[in-house]
Amino acid sequence: MKYRVLVVDDSPFMRKLLSDMIESDPDFWVVGTATNGFEAVQLVQELQPDVVTLDVEMPGMSGLETLKKILKTH
Image (cartoon, rainbow, N blue to C red; front, side, top):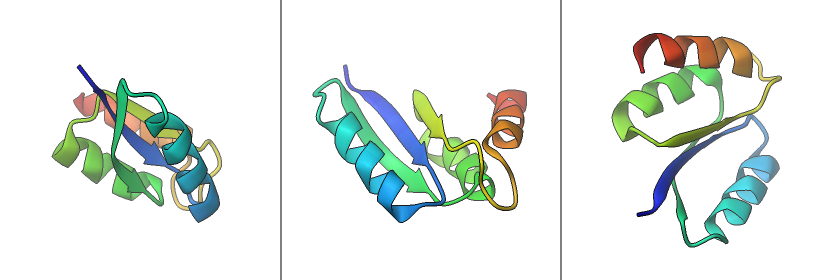
């Protein structure tokens, strides 16, 4: 079984770096990336990932605020 991962970070470099690191393990598959918390909340509903990585400091909605919203519905 591969674990489905959503990578959330406002930095394109960090999204790519994290995605590459995660996918270097055959047990993990990056199913999507998001650039902010609002997009992450929507993609969690659509993609149903097993794991979500969150940048703590993001414009608009921080990673901690995003986590609270995700936990309310999942």
